[in-house]
Length: 637
Image (cartoon, rainbow, N blue to C red; front, side, top):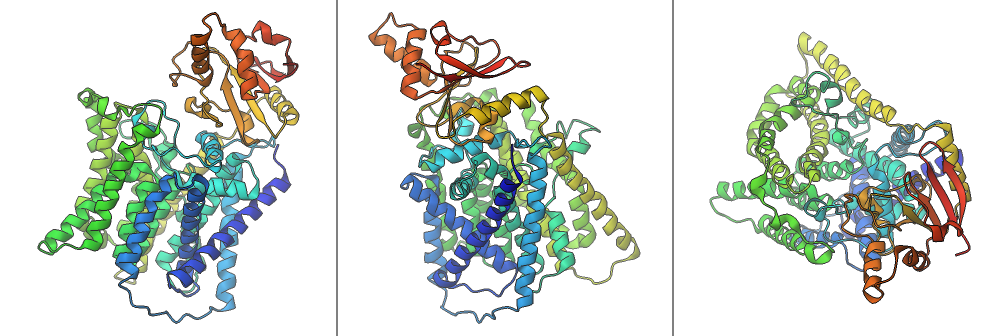
């Protein structure tokens, strides 16, 4: 039920957003931070990155009146001005305006790359039946959460996603806040923007970051631009390798690419910024950006603080105990703030923080094999990018591994340790490894390929390398691109004609201004607290979330199955009402609950029955014969 006009409008929204973020970032860099760069790939990346960052920061703080995790960025910004800008002499850089040819080339590449990416995401999320379905099911939840954030509410205990059973709250708010800003500005469906517009913008910025590694402030080169675009498809190939053995590759992982899973992209974006700062010897700035990565995605907390802490310790030993406070103070303060932030999560939520009540002696000893299989498995999954790096500059890659061997060891060990230990609390703890690995590797390997090629020690290759290098690149990245495209193809929404007709009738007849749906689904609990669809806590959503904003679900039965939630709004209020009126029945209370919550539609799933005292007050809108799902309009209540 999408239209060509909607697609064209969405593409226009992408271009306008890119221009807006760049203008905001470029103005801030030039007039506030006094940083000027020539018209180049690096300037575009820096402007876009800064513009997105400051937009998310300001919007989240304004909408929540400061009750947001984005506040953790403020001390890092303060450290930047105190330790970096305060000590820098004011020496404005003489910058040429840039030739028209260069400016047109930059604009042309931006339009081309964003267009290709948008077409890719359209292919992934839109089917031939004029239906929009996110290729990744979690996009529904993130679209819903974007609407929640836009109302000014953010749960501060984002770590509870791992440490509290059934937590619905996100542990990666950065891109969700960005999506909340985008869908509000352009008045689009929040799930639509998260699946189509947001990833296009993020990967366009990543493209310019990769271009900055090779071109920097030099002229734009067409072959290099094509190479950087192809490198956006860098991914692991477990989908293919899993066919040959399941020891290291038990299942094809959707986390393998930021193109597939949007929440991987912000991690890669910030890590790319760290790499560029290190290339330009901006170590202090790189430290501050690295320390901001746990705010972007909480799963980066263990590896970031472990690796950065080791680097500070190594520098301390190298300098014979001479403390560099510009490194130590930001690290120590940020670490303490995160500790307070996490431990205060118990008071921010409705459930107890179960981390300290868990018997970690019950950890499955078989999980310890991950300390060995994870590094080996991921090395095999990224065999082609690694092979390319070795072919380009074998000696420099070995030097890189020797120099940062302990950091690499900590990266694997710490993330795996959190996975192993916290997996006894909740299975989602695997993201301490998967999300961290893919967010870093999908940027690190392309960056090394580009950097080593740009700075190779020799000009001429031997005959063997002249053959091997293009062969490995073509085979490897053909598999990478095929992995992404095949995932998109296999997950495209398919439905029978009756189901499509059922959904179409509901979308056409439902009122867009207020959609409160009472759910009758026996055996499960659908939770709703406040004015937000917490049904996603049970991974409950419907096709309506792909077309309508502010769809709110309420359970109007008390489930008997093993639902994730301990209680729902209906069950909690019913228990409270029974204390004052012990003879009150569910059927009598249900009428009052529907009135109080403003429920105007009822959805009855298979096996559910409409209560007798409601049957005469509902008007059937549509019924799906296959699933036996019925959708009613509340009338005459």
